[in-house]
Image 1: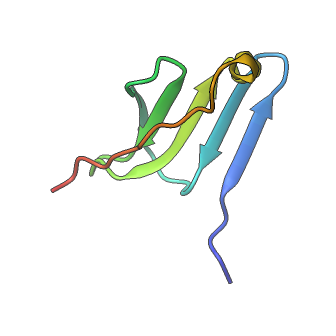
Image 2 (image 1 turned 60 degrees about the vertical axis):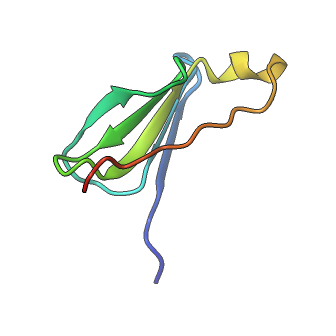
Image 3 (image 1 turned 45 degrees about the horizontal axis):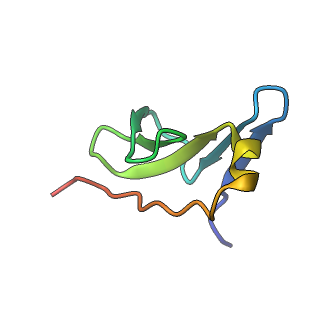
Length: 71
């Protein structure tokens, strides 16, 4: 069986969150102001969030690399 990915969208807040793993972690900034990456204590990417998703309609496609900084 595959791993569960949790996707949550709040239409009122215009907020999308995608979690690859349900572990403790924290969100940190990325190179894009609308995107935050969620990492665990070992700097492993466990998810991401996008603010103001509907505002991306008029922009070119959103493209961002999420990088783990763990050694």
